Image (cartoon, rainbow, N blue to C red):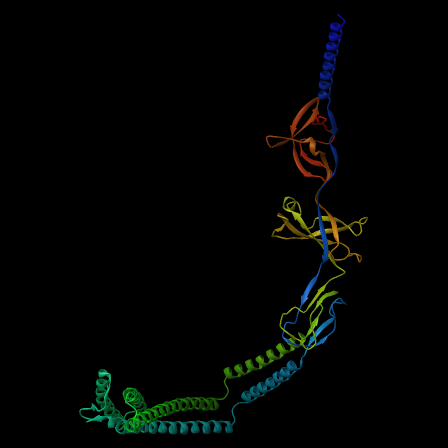
Length: 505
């Protein structure tokens, strides 16, 4: 009996405990937390890490090539803007400048002479030169005809003395008297002898006619070419004859004839070129006489003025190059590289010296893709350097790269933060924590971010209206670094916001 009573008591206690637990849980769920929408400033920030680097860094070299004559600085030295670093030897340029000035004086003297007009003695000189050119032309034309006649004579001699000894009846019914292994070659030799005979008849007729010298020369050139080709064919046949005194004599005779024909052809072509040159000289002298008689034209004076201007341009070019022999520092800073040595040949645009600024530093950092849309040029930044953890410097974003940089597989964008004031203690390479203020809302209504719920893609907040909990749609603005969100519509200052229940774990 006692055991049953104890069991009933225990069961009653368990029911009481469970009931009280259910009551406590229900009561807790019904408790709510509220707060009032506040009014204040909301700042949106991006926090990143960066490194200081020189704001200015330049690589320098000479714009011209030359031999280094002097070295004024070494690596590690501090230099000021405009300080000379290296110098090239300038002796060659000085010589070129002197020559350019002499050329200008010559052109100016020529212009003065042209502007004064022709003198009688100048016209007489032009006449004399023209007459000399005409005489030279007549002599060249006579020599050309003589060369054509000589070519015919030597060709005729080669044919009748060197070739005809190889034939029977060479002029009427030529028959080659020596054995030839190629039957076709023997036929060509015999037919060729008849043809070359006709060539000589035609050639002689032209030379003895009243035709122009040009016709006589062209016919002689054609005749020489025919004789040369035929002698090559004869040489081919003769060279197959067996060695022996008589055969060797035949071979030598043909070889000598070919040499004479080649020489005659070369002499005739040279004589023809000489006539062409002489005619050009006569044309030139005719022009000179015409210019001398007509006096200096406006166009000729313009040409001479252009030559003077060209000489002036050459002088200016050399003077500019003389300035380029001195390599100057464009900025103040530290020489981080100096490869120039005295006596060394420096190539144009070859980097010899590098300088980094020391007074002006900037900070380079990388912003992840997820945050770069918030950052803009002009954003204010607060910087704390690891070397000076208790000091804060102010800067601003001055540059954002257009292209991405992949770092550890993540897309980033490089930015530059420029300091508002130089700090002499900063060094290139120092690390800094950077807090960029990307947006700021002054006097804004805001609530904690966790007070906002998203229903079907719409931002909502639950607030107390006339003592009742009411859910309203809101329009949000920027998210502050402290977790508060700017509310643009749906909540006003003083509204009581119901915070979502957060069950304790």
